[in-house]
Image (cartoon, rainbow over all chains, first blue to last red; front, side, top):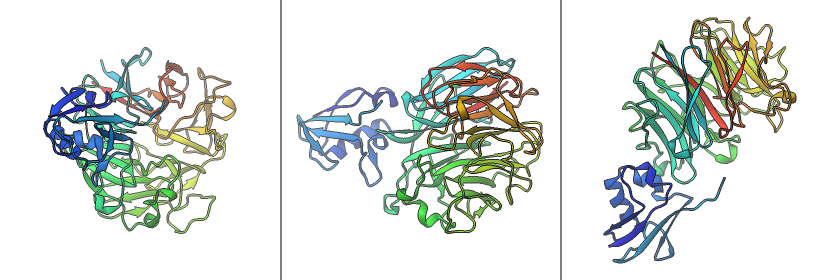
Length: 87
Length: 359
């Protein structure tokens, strides 16, 4: 199981979506797909057509910057960060 | 008693202000849409829904919807994207139009998407492909500041397959066959810059149409006010008498074809009220002459701007006029602009103000 941590900007958009989710997945793309199945539209909030991660969405797997293709292993920690600063 | 509802799109979410028919006391609710920048919020009188076009720096563009006048909200962008193979990128949803339950949204890069299920799913309707100038407008380097793409859409209430679209910095286009074909409608407009195409290259900020005479339109252009008496087929300039030729917002009187309102702004970088003196200007004779309306508005040190969707007028017998500013104030006039009150302050920068009267 991967330990997935989501940003606070994301959870209010989907009823019942928690900040922290444990799930089985082989890649970052799989993580997003699994969450999209349960919360339709989830993928659109993180990915652009292509697909690729949105410009200001950063994903880290075990503290290393990741792409959609980055492998996720059993016990991996996946951090999804809304990365831009602003006011 | 009817409810009067103002829908306010801001840089930090959507707000609602509600009053009764008197339009004297207002209650504010919000922010809604999780603080996403809202470029335009509208009410659909057919379904009763509110729609808000929003674009988050983090989570992309979507249209929010509320079917209970703001009590609950949901968002969707399903289908609201260009194919990756097209090379076009949807960076912003800029403007909304509703007609009989159908919702259109104008986006950047310039295109129009439609929804027929209450903004739950979307499909691409048109990119105005092949129109003069279209070979340039997909390149972000050629687009004007603001990057609105399709900056406005306006339905013909008598003919659902007919509507008008403004391409920011390019001009007005009309379709009569539900976006299968388009015709530029910019004849007679002024442009103080070189244009590669005769029919386009005009900077139309706001287009409005008289509800009592569909042949009569007005537009606030980057350079001048203009009137059309033939549904936009030709335009004449009516700027004389206004303090500046520049502005964004405009509104038509709901019962009088000759009465029309604008908010002239300094055309320089500031784009605020001239000399810090807040005022709406009105013509009652189709632009032959103009009057300054400023009773109750700040007369000095008011360096505020009003954007293209940020003024609205209701349809009561004695119409109310409303505008929101780039510095978060909303001013309301319950008497056709004769007197004004500030009804909200300290809101985020305001992008749009629309009004709905709900029985």
